[in-house]
Image (cartoon, rainbow, N blue to C red; front, side, top):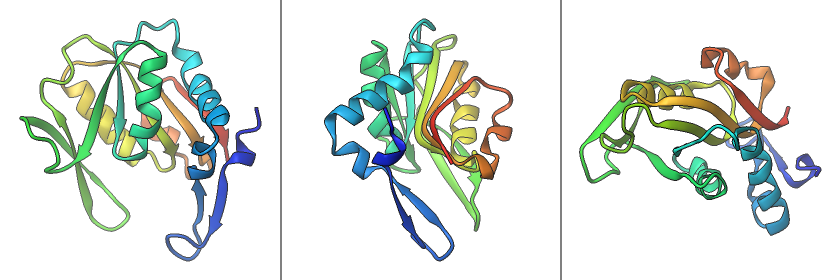
Length: 170
């Protein structure tokens, strides 16, 4: 399936010089959305994934159906202060400043096999932070799956040689 034609590019958004990859056009077509989730999970079907972990917010969009496809649970990673129980957190660098992500401390048991899922791999900052947090609580990361990869930003290099699948590459 030609997923690229289902992704709209919006120039100069959110700021001048950015070519934003808009997945909302892919999501509104149920056949394309379903095929995308299958494509994102197929490399990991035989990896006995216990949990899918997805960062806020578009990681939720692909992570939940990926978890269902893999017969696994889903763990949301949220921005600081959004989760009600005790959390584990990691701060990471943004272009200007820092941000903090959190997940519930009891979300992952040591040794559980997880797949990290997000819509986009760009610089690798967000998913590296999620990976660090998961490894800190003893998770075994079987891989990372993305709908889109912006290869020219070299995010893959930050991911310590982990197994990575991306569907549409720019």
